[in-house]
Length: 551
Image (cartoon, rainbow, N blue to C red; front, side):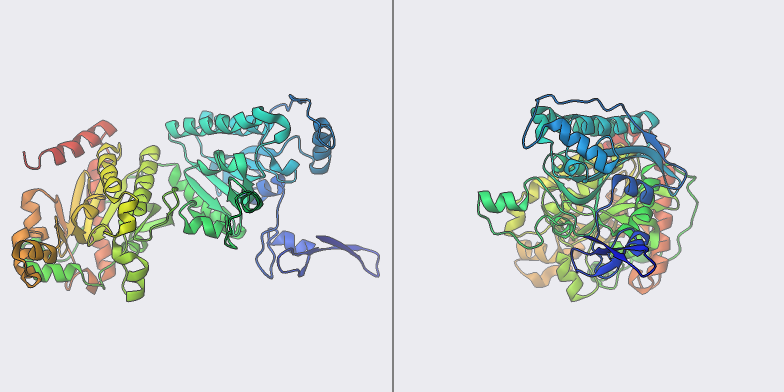
């Protein structure tokens, strides 16, 4: 609510009442803070024009417009004729329709934006809105630059009937064309985004970002409660609820949107630089060969070894973690996202354990559920679309064996990843950094180059499991470790791994920085060899590598 206060000097000062905390905020202060309440952080709605001004670089904005035809296909009348409603919305917003489209740049990164305005008939999706959003996508396709769609809508426009419904398909097929062209698409969900918009372009983009507390869903809360009488949680359909359930990638407050979008756009518009030549330092493969296999198993499981997130912090610039399988679950036992390795855009996925009991429990001890493997698959498909390498870091005792995992298709999720990785038309490098436990490890391991850290292990089963099954004695685990030939020095002659990544004295757990330097050098060596290859060569080489085992 806006309150006008008249001072003694008869000058009006605008104060805004925050709908969340009820505090009064000076209007100009609210505008300086991008219309975010300074007291409680509530994100006030902004118009489409304000949003364009907030996001795009000054001086870069090129409006994209199409003539908006006067249309009333149904001759629709409720309490007033549809043309009257349109005229009223145009007068109150100064817009021709409920979306503003423009080309521009964010921190120098070119893109096309389509920004919806909830103030224009609730941001409803009608024929003109669908046409404008499709036109924006086609402009991005023609210019070969990314597309950003900012959503704010109650859904399809009822006054246009089935013609409004068809805009869902029209805009969705436009995004399919951008997928085919390998162009990055980003959705920024603002409050509210519902109905036909949520069930089309808002949720089809490569990366989905939401402002805090923004609501998104197909059916609104009131509809659900009144029709099927379900009791819903207080945070239902909010950004926080969606993130926890694997339906969006990121939540970013308004002040952080520009730098976040700039990072994503720079990575999603690949320009591969020269690969630097860096040399590893540390333990040699010869000294590793002298170690007892059971001792190596213990070193591989050391909780002080760097985790995937530790390595990402050491290896990558501009890393943005992306979350969720987009099917209703987020599994923190696998992490992944977009980043740069020595300037090279990459997608990284990896198992994540932890260093403490609390971290291990929160990450399920690095044992993924089907949702984790499906998240990894989603990110690898994104890498294939953008034409950038995949780096997979493997450190897991195995896939999670619980009831829920089986109910949700653990075996299927692993199998689908094996098939997917064999077809990726980009360089794929996998590294076993700790434990490589069975199919749960291999689900990230179908690569052109498979590397292994000097004190890591890779096996069809754990030594304890093997000892229990074949020796009927878990205490025979050291004997099983020797029989399984699971150490780096034993795997390399078998061709299971291509190279051994040296470790610093005392292992990676003794010096994370040196461990990161060694892994970086090893990855760059692989990328230097793989990046010049064509997609056909990469796929053929990967298939030949795995075809040879057992032949």
